[in-house]
Image (cartoon, rainbow, N blue to C red):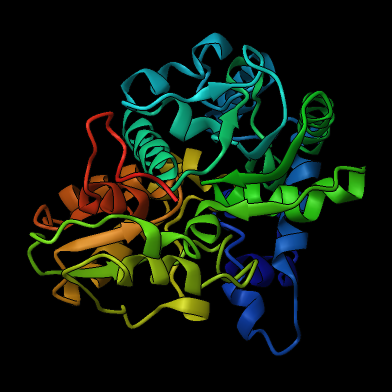
Amino acid sequence: MRQVRAGQRGGDLLHDDLLWLCTTCANCLRVCPKEVNMVRVMPAAREQAVGQGAVPRELQDVFEKTFRYGNCLGENPRRRALWTRGAGVPVRVLPQDPGPVDVLFYVEDYWSYHPRGQQAAQAFARVATALGVDFAILGPEERTVGDSQRLAGERGLFEALAEQVMATLAKYQFARIVTPDPHAFNALLKEYPKRGGHYEVLHYTQLLAPLVDRLPMRSDLPPRRVTFHDPCYLGRHNGEYDAPRSLLRAIPGVELVEMARCRENGYCCGGGGGGMWLDGLSGSHTRERLSERRVREAAATGAEVLAVCCPYEVSRFEDAAKSTGNEQLVVRDIVELLDEAMVKSADGGGGDGA
C-alpha cells in the first residue's frame, strides 16, 4: 500500500495525490497480516484534508453539486423521476401517491439521471412489475445517501444528507428499502443505524434472486458466455456474492465464466471512495485505470458480455472497453439482461406477475 509506505517515510499525505488514489475497496485489509484498516484510515485522513481545503478540483465540484442539489451530478431534483416515462410500466411516486408500500426503491443518482443508468432503472421497473413486486420511489424527494461523499472525506456533508434522508423516510410507510447502489446499500446497512435510521435493506439482486424462477423467460435466446464483476461494496464489504450469480444462471443460454480475480478476491472498478469522480487525477498517476485492467481481465475469459450490478460500473466499463480496444465486450447490468430475457406482455411487463 503506497499510502502506508508514504506515511511511514514521514511524508505529508494530506497534501499528496496519493491520498485520493485509494478506492476503499478493502482488498488490502483482506490480505494485510497486521490488519491495517485503510477503509477507516483514508476517509479520516481525507476529512482532515477537506477541512484544510486541500481537495482535488474534480471532487470539490461533486461536493458542491451534492450540497446544492442533493445529487452528485448537479441535476434538478424535480427531474429525478423522469426516467419512469420510458419504463413502459407504471411506477408509483410516493409524494404524489402516498400510502403503505412493501418496497421503497431507492434509485440513487446514476440510475435516476445518467442515460445508461436510466435504462437499467427502466429494466428494473419492468422486471419488478412482472414479478408482482409492490414498489414505489420517492421521486423529487429522494437525495443521495452520500456514502461515497463520506468516504471521500466530506463527513459534514454526509451527516447533513443522512439527517435529510431519514426525515424523508420517516414520512412514509414501507417494509424494506431496495437499492441498486452497493454504496447506498452499505450506508443504509451500516452507517445510518448509528444515527437512528434502522431499516431492512436489500440490494436489488437480493430482492430478485428468490423470485427469478417466476419470471417468464424467452425460449429463443442464443447461447452467451457471460462473466461477472463483483462490486466491492456488495461483495467484499458486505459478503453478497451469490445473489447476482443466481440471477445470471437463471437466464436461458447464459454460460457464466469467472474471471481469475472474483468473489472475495475481486478487482476494483476504480469508482469507490470518491474514485468515480477522480479519473483525471488517477489517470495522471497510473499507467492504466483500474476499469481498463478489469475489462482486459473480462475479455481474457472469452466472454461476450461483462455483467455488473452497480450503477458506477456500466459507463466505466463501456468507456474502458473502447479505450482498451475491446469494443466486442458488451457491458450490461444484470437487470438489463433479465429484462432482455423476459417474455413481454402487451403492457410492457412480463407474464401475469407472481
